[in-house]
Amino acid sequence: MVMQPFDLVVIGAGSSGASLALEAVRRGLRVALLEAGDPGIGTSSRSTKLLHGGVRYLELAFKKADPAQFKLVREALAERRYWIEQAPFLAHELRIALPTRHGLEQLYYRVGLGMYDLLAGAAGLEPTQGLGGAELKELLPGLGNSVSSGLLYSDGQFDDARLNLLLVLTAQAAGATVQRDCRVVGFEQVNGRLQAAISQGPDGQQQRWLAHQFVNATGIAADGLRQQAQPDAPSRLLVSRGIHLVLSEQLCPGGVGLLIPRTRDGRVLFVLPFLGRTLVGTTDQACPLEQATQVTPEETDYLIEHLQQWFPSFSAASITSRWAGGRPLIQPAGGTNSSSVVREHEVEQLPCGLISLLGGKWTTCRRLALDALQLISHQPPREQPLPLLGAANSWQETHTALQALRETLTLALPGGAAQAEHLLTSYGLRAQQLVQEAQQCSELEPLSAVIPVSRAEWRFNHRHELARNSADLLDRRSRIGFLDQGEAERLSAPAATWLEELSSASPSSHQLNP
Image (cartoon, rainbow, N blue to C red; front, side, top):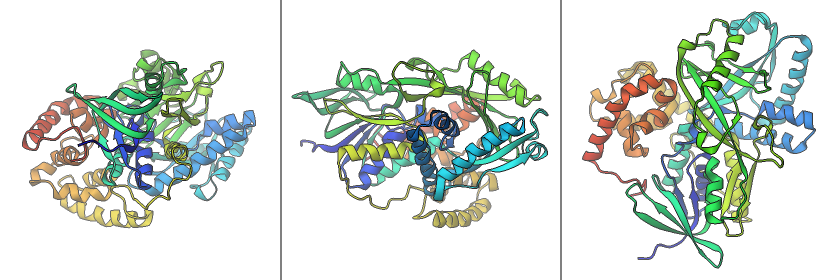
């Protein structure tokens, strides 16, 4: 039997590839989504967890008087609202304090953040407000005494890995063929045009994927695939590494984050609440592709130094996790420092036909997908309504259903309210299915004080969410590995044993679709 060509083969199931697969299948296209590892294993699970328009980019837009950058910020602000409404169990509004040292500085940032609110328009969140020194210290009691005033503005915070996964799973449920552990190793061409992609699985077996269009959505690795399809294609991307530290110490006890607007070399840092701990990042340093996930001692020291300037009592002993991820920036002509590059995106098509999604950021990955669809089909069909798995048809319906389910799960679960909150903020309305599929009550017992995961949850991850190894469970299905690396090491062996038992009882392939 000869496989019929897909309309679209998307290579890479990070945020951009997953968004494209979902938007394409919503419009009736026949889609295959191929992922070399686990969805979101790279940059898409290693972000700063912010849905934002880009306060720094807005500042650059002012300084350069660049209308295109204002447009980029306005577009991102609209998408910020979109994600909060589409996945309210994974994304929420976050208030962030920006400290100022004197009146002129406060006026400068007040004008900029006022423009930030204005550009958001109807998609805006709670507006910016001024803060006195006492108010700022009340919100962030560990701050030093050198700050006399500040501003409080809004952005969004989200679980990047789980949103990425739900985009993939929703596309699959709508009819996309999705396959993990499926690395594209080559292409077939006829008369200089791509006809098929050749993939290879972990066992070395190869598979041929015919399609009318092929899209390269491999993020920081996009240049490699571009040059595999067309060897003379010039490199387009600059890789910028962001490093993050997680602290057991709660520097944001009231749930308000902090933007440090200036460091000694002009970069910005965030100090954010993160699942009961504190997330600090990012350093935004250009690096070679192969070093994108390396946490260097120099960058760690850089974060510690600046954090101690703002929080004098902070101790490096409270660091429980450190991790890094690369961001794909479109290389400007002549080169530049990565911290001054605006994260704009581009949809490129090579003469051989390969379409590449270049640049961009998490918040605007859907816009990048829609731009790609416009190139693939100049008049793409209207999308069909398709809520994400775990959500209802509207924000209000989802919110109401979650409230009712929260009460039920709090009473039913051995971990009470904390476990119920964890399941609801990870799985949304699918939390009920997860609990119902537990084969005995003991499977719901929490296994960790860091995040109350259970064997029932791991069973659900394996059965319904593509988890194949302990890193899948601990890093991306829950965030234990990103919160506390010591705790992840402790749970790694039990998680691997449980997966082995589940695989023996019900063998599963690397393909999501039966």
